[in-house]
Image (cartoon, rainbow, N blue to C red; front, side):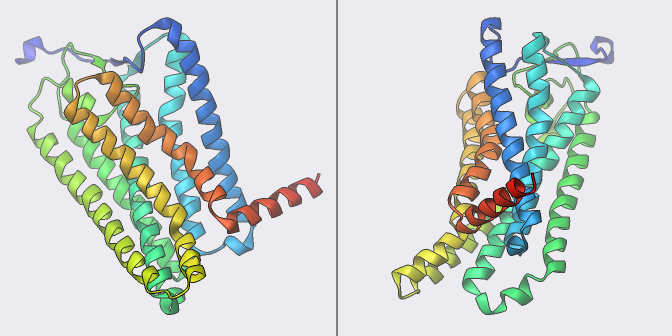
Length: 312
């Protein structure tokens, strides 16, 4: 398309989950409730870990960072959607769309890499317990988290710079409830071949490789647990990483659901619903998984509650 047919796009339109105005208020109430539960639950996890010396271990250090990322992830997406539902206004500015895209990539990638780091922590704890203190020193844990954040930030900067080189013409409607990278690229009237190659390369590097590392870690963990002679010992070993395994299955299961739904169906509604499971529901249920399945967290929650009650 020639330059004479191109126009400067000042804003995009987020079509959201439903175009029926009578459904906007129920959706607003649903997502406001989910957002509040997510924020309160994950902040509570961070407060409990920060205030309880029994939880000042590598596993809970990584968990507190995961909770922080989950709060940031839903805050990147949900408030804008709530505002659009309440005002019946689908518009998002060009700069706002790219900002949302940038932060979504940062936090989604950080989520993925932190789960990989936590799998490595479980692997060391179960398979090399005698070397755990040496292999998971505080500076090593800090370095792993720093690397996760750095890689996520660099990846996001690269992706956004590549999208900014594209031209956008008259098409402005995004068939999603947020500015998702693939959906925004579909609106471009430029050649997106280089962008597509970059997306597939990064997905393989920062998606498939970490997932392979998690699979390897849990293969070794299961092998070590099966060699434990007593049933009590097996249960204790599995309970160490059971919560993390549940979160991994939920995260990658919903992420795979988004990929498959976008490949198999052309229904934007089904793709959006799958994305809600991945980007909103998963961060919401993570605190429940870690608090309900983890005895240390249950006891720490009781101590935190009693301290809070006694201080009033």
